[in-house]
Length: 184
Image (cartoon, rainbow, N blue to C red; front, side, top):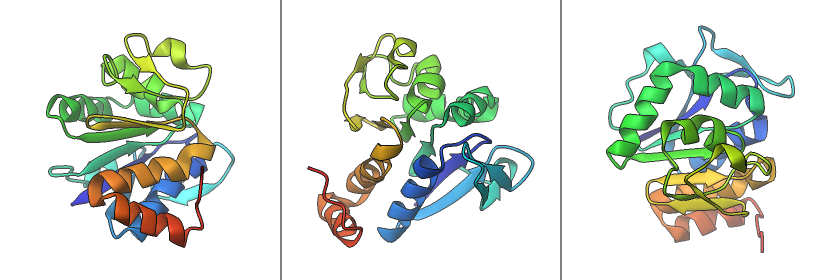
């Protein structure tokens, strides 16, 4: 099954590319998707990334994961993109998997009601945007079909949580070992 990581100008590079890298190392089929009219998307720190596809050219039917990286500008741009908002909302209503990190839980998921009544995390200081959610000060929180992450330093753990949910804890541990990742 395919998973999709969305790129919008201003995205946090670590939060977008770490999940792509970690998920691909695990053998997951991951496609990066630009929400603009260009495959080239500029991150928050000036890194230009060429997305695999444009939003308009992708069939998201049957997607396993929809992943929203943060970065303040990137999250604001994702939140303003109505086709993505509609897809995220319908996926959660159908109990399908979505993930967001950094500013995206607060700016993309919270306004759509995705984390309402759920445990979640986001970039510290943005919790006030997440009323109705039980905010937890930890790197990664999984609640049902929703995974949220705190910020750039949490990007690998966030990605490993996605892998663990899809392929099991053993596969996530195998990938973590290959990355020399040992967060205690």
